[in-house]
Image 1 (cartoon, rainbow, N blue to C red):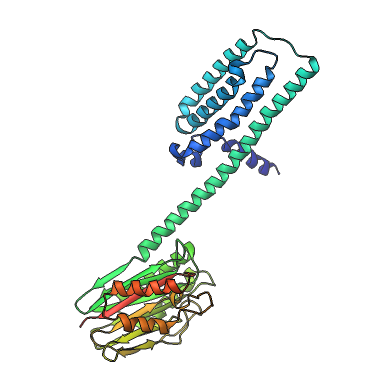
Image 2 (cartoon, rainbow, N blue to C red; image 1 turned 90 degrees about the horizontal axis):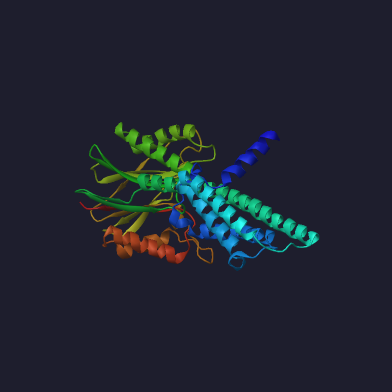
Length: 389
C-alpha cells in the first residue's frame, strides 16, 4: 500500500511540466500553443478567486487584472520549466513580487463587508483556488501518462515501419535470363509477409513467405527466417534442404503458436525450375507458348509448425516469355461484400491478358483489381518472375 501511494505521489509530482520529464521535453514549443492557451484560461479561474478575496476593495482593471495576471504568469512559468528551467525561478519570483505589489495597492482603500458574507466569499474563493489547482494537476498527470504511452507507441510503430522497409523492400531485379519485380503491402506498420530474390553461385532463388501474426513479433521471426534461408543458401543447399533447415531453426526462436508458410523457386541454368512449397498458396506458372497457366502446388506442412518435418521439391519446365506469379493468401482470399474470395482463377485471367506488359505494370493491374474486389484485411505480397531467355 505504501509503495503504491509513493508511486502515485511520484506520478502526480512528475505530472507538473519540467525539463526532466521526457514527455514534456520532447514536445516542440510550437505544438504547445493550445495547451498554453488552456493553461492561461484555467489559471484565470484562480485569478477570479483572488479578485473575490478582495471584494471589499476597489477592483483592479475592472476585476480583470488578477485573471489576466495569473493566466499570463502561469503560462510563462509552465513554458520556462520545460524549455528554460533556469528562468523558471526568475519568472516565479517576478510573479510573487508583482502580485504582492498589486495586492498591497488594492488594499489601500475599501469598505469592509459584513463578517458572515466576508467569510463566505473567502471560503468560496479558496475553494475555487484549490479545486482548479488540484484538478489541473490531475489533468496534467493524465496527459503526461497517456502522452508517454503514446510516445512509446509511436516509437514502436516507427521502429516496426523501419524493420518492414529493411526486411521487405520493393524488389526490382534483372539479369541476362530473368526479370523479377515484387512488392509487399503490410496491413499494419509491421506485417508478416516476406519476399526476396537471391543470386548465388550462378543460381537464382526467389521466394515468398507468410509469417503468422503481425507486429514486432512477426517482424522478428521474418528477419530470422530471411537470415536462415540466406545462410543456408551459402552452403549450396537445394530447395528441399533449405526448407528443412528453416524448419529446424524456427522452433527455437518463436512462440509456440507461430509458424511460416513459404513458396520458393530456384533457377539453376537448366530448362527446369525447381520449386518447393510449405503450406503456401500455389505458384502460378503462365506458359507463353500455350497461353495457359499451371498451378504449382505441394501438400507440405508450414515451417516451424511440427518439429522434424521432411520436405520435397519438384520441377517444372519453362521457356522464354514464361511468367511465374508468387503471392500470399492476403491477395487470393480477399472477400467482397458477398463474401466471395478473389481467388486464383482471376489471377490466371489477368496473367493471360497482360502477360506482355512490363512487370511493374502487371503488378499494378493485379493489385488494382484486388482492391476493387474488396478491402485489404491481411498483408498482401506479390512477386513476378519473367523468363527472358
